[in-house]
Image (cartoon, helix red, strand yellow):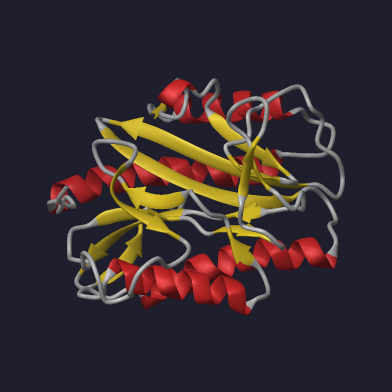
Length: 251
């Protein structure tokens, strides 16, 4: 399947959707505190998205039951909001998607709840720094697999491993589109499609500590590592403009 090339007016629409995602993540990160439940956080996020005229795109997507993926501690992605109370020292992943005027935005952060350990600080810093480093390195004409290789090398260079079987993705008038962009290389880096002006996609390093093999929990959504250790996740949506990646999901 061909990777869509977006026209400038489409990128503007995608940026509007992305900005709402960025603002929602900023709002939540500034207002979440120990003692809240994951369900309360989901309600806050949904209300904020709707107050900006957008639709929470995760709610009902493939059957997901909520608007915000709340991935706590050992859960790396797709955490389902429950009545579980967050506590000082936890780390919490927030992944949010919105739809505005038929175009989608999608981004994620992992945030500390109060003071956290140095080990958890390093874990969060890995996903964030790897994401921004990869975005800075993108150039028109490079293969997506070269970008994937960079993601994996950056993760492993910090002593962590990428989650397997899950990936970043194209985005536009559908929440998930071509191409799939894993955080680990399969095959040779100079193979497959190249990055072109007008492409819009999401990069999302998903970081595990010892094993990248995923385990899906009983809720059929929450993904952990088989090592049972804490994980982290960061994501931005970018558009390729004038040969470079521009982040669309900033507040």
